[in-house]
Image (cartoon, rainbow, N blue to C red; front, top):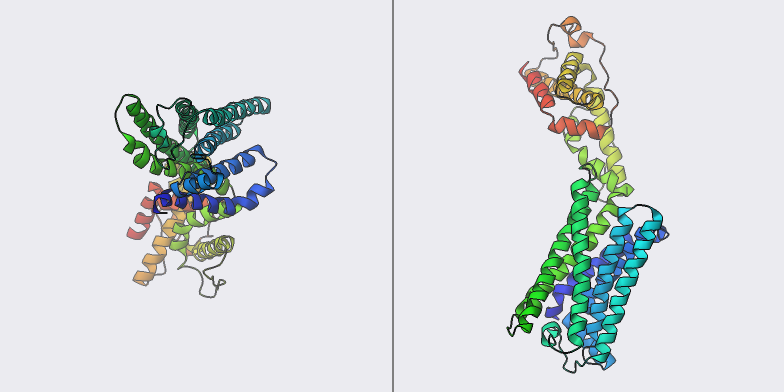
Length: 402
């Protein structure tokens, strides 16, 4: 059993992923990418479970055919490779007719390879059961040798195409599409691990053909690489689907608002009471709660807003080449950060009056001005600039010094 854990554990994780995404896959079953994802996950689970030595022995005993698992596992690996290529084609988009033709061609080619594997095993001779080293043990056996080469060639082509294409798309994908970029990075990593698996297999096989014994590469080094590759690739295809869901978007926004929430939660009016959260509260409720705290904090700081700080930050942002929309967000964040710093400093020094630089209306004390309003840009954009903009940091520091 221990010899199978290295494959059973990632196989169980793939089943968990499949169960979690089952409702989504069911609702969107009419979409070809969803069917390809489902096929990929199912094939990955089957490969990992059926390729484990305990399962191989059980299948051989059940069928009464020595090494019956060999064409079964090799055929499933071939189908898994074909599923990866099909999903890449569906994911890449393009004219529907072209995608359909390419998909049908891929299915036909990999289906033909799977049939060839079965035929070659049927006409070959493999009487000695091998649970872990069938590739190298039968490396010189007629027809079984061709079966092994056939599955390795198909797998090499599929894995190479998957790795190259995802790497190319990763370079072209915009940084703002984080779920997609993460998925592509995971798939590319899985592809590289799979290529490592193939290098180990081909090297061990070549060593056998040249009279050397490097079987350890095939029996010891290759299985962990295969398990990691299958898990990475399957997870990589799932991440963009999860990332596009409402729950993931809520979570991303909830996490992005943390710096703004942390800075403003202490300024809300004491009369404001938010609904307490429990540890099982959904992320959507948590997001609403966090937005309410931020809004309350902004309202509490309104009289500390300085339009001169906002104007100076806006001009600085525009001078740095920022777009008008982003400059507006930076200006809002700078005014808000300065208000936080000024309010904190006033509380520390027991001073409730603040003045600004004497330029036109800036000579009027803040308490006597009409409080300016924020421009209404999304809170997530405001939080991002509030946390990371040097202009905002400079405005905050200047307010504290003043």
